[in-house]
Structure formats: C-alpha cells, structure tokens
Length: 319
Image (cartoon, rainbow, N blue to C red):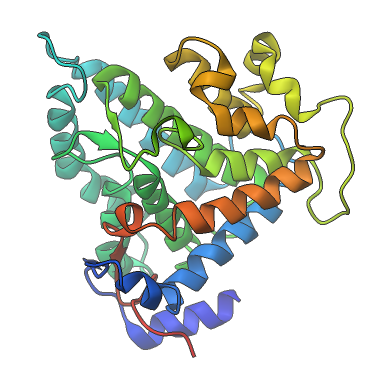
C-alpha cells in the first residue's frame, strides 16, 4: 500500500489543495476518488494499529514527538489569548486572534520541525490540512469536517514518510494531543458545533475518538466477544470514565461530554446512550466506522470544505 502511494505521489506531484465539493452532486464523484479510498483506508489502518493499545505519555519516534510538541504549544497559545469579555453565546471573537497566530506561525513551525531534504515539496499540501484542523475562523465553529482535516494531515505525514513506522501508541498520542487542543478551544472560546445534527447526532464535535477508542478496547482482528470487565455501559460510570480517559480515546470523548453538558446522559446524548446497550466493542467499532462513512464522508455540509491536492488526497477517479 505504501509503495503504491509513494509511486502515485511521485507521479502526480504536490499542488496547493483546493475545494472541489461545491454541490451535493459532487458527493457521488467524491466516493469514486483516490482521496476517498485513502481516507477510508486510513481509518481502517489506524484502527488496526491502535487495537488493544493504550495512550502513552510520550513517544520514542522523533517525528511523532515533534508533532506532539507543536500541538502542546498550541494549548499554551490559548492561555496567552484569553476570551474577550462581553455577552456572546457562541464563538468568542478571541478565537479569531488564536487562528491568526496559527496561520502566521504554523507554516514555518511545521517546516522547521518536520522538514527534511526529501519532503520539502509536501508542505504545500500538509500545511493546509493542519491549518484546517482547528475550526473555522469565519464561522467560529468546530466539527467533524475539521477533525477529518487532521486525519488527512496525519495520513500525509505517513504517505510522505515524514513519520516512519509509527506504533499504535504513537498514533494514539498524536490524536490524544490533537483532541486536547480542540477541547480547550471549544471550552475557552465557546465554539459552535459545525454541521451538528443537534441532540440526534453522535457527538457535537467529534467522531474519530469513538472509532479508535473502541478499537483500543478489543482485538478487532478477532471474532466478537463480550468484555464483562469493561462493558459498553461502563461509560455511564463517571468516576470510571475519569480514570480511563487518559488511556482511551473513547472514554476521553465521553469525559468531555460530561464536562460540557448537563442533565441525563440519555437526554443530551441519546445515540451514545443507545450504544451502551450494544453487546460488544467489536460491534460498536464496526458501527462507528459505518456511521462515519454515512454521517461524515457522506454528508455535503461536512465534507464540502475538505481540500484536494495533487499527491496526498487527489480529486482523481480511482482506476
């Protein structure tokens, strides 16, 4: 798989990513593209890597550690740019100041930290995916379309071999730190959920932690089996969620919901509540991927802002 992608990258060359999904009909072509195949393959490949693994505290992979360092610096910017005062229900205007700093500093930071002789041209595509990962400066919102952009950034690092041979723990550390940045942005600047289905959506902001987090709990290559020591309904135990959140993305995402929502879980998160009745984490994992394909990759309001370049995620029909 990696060899074929490397050959494709060399053949196509890097180009500044641009918007291609401009109307609902473009969704059908999107499903036939190389980009779509790579996105769905990434979700599967990364799920296999993180299966049965826990989030570590650090990584011995140099490139992974550098990306984590950049993400951790983004959190410090939040504390340096406090929310402005004044009545406003959603989207504090200071978020735009944070985004402006992101746009000013990140291109050079990424090149300085991750650049080498072999990948210089790749940053024309890598940088926009990273910049698109943290919400919209104009709409002051965040949703699964932005999360998709970070998935593309991580995929780009793998495809260009900027990150080589990451372990499942490395993948978890990257996404854990990314989600930590976004959670802080949402809490600090009261970002609006982007493309939310309201109470009948899975989650106001995220989807990937439920895919990867469910894969962490069981060996997804094996047949379904129940886990009486950690059944799906365990997410209803707030103290257990708090204990497991630093180790597991699913429980971390549930913990964030408990921080931002009040009332009964079955009322504010009915879809996730229904999932607690599923028999196995294997089935939950498969269901989360199926839902991702339908509700993220298959929805125009979500994917309309995704960018397509020449090499990493091309708007090109697959053979």
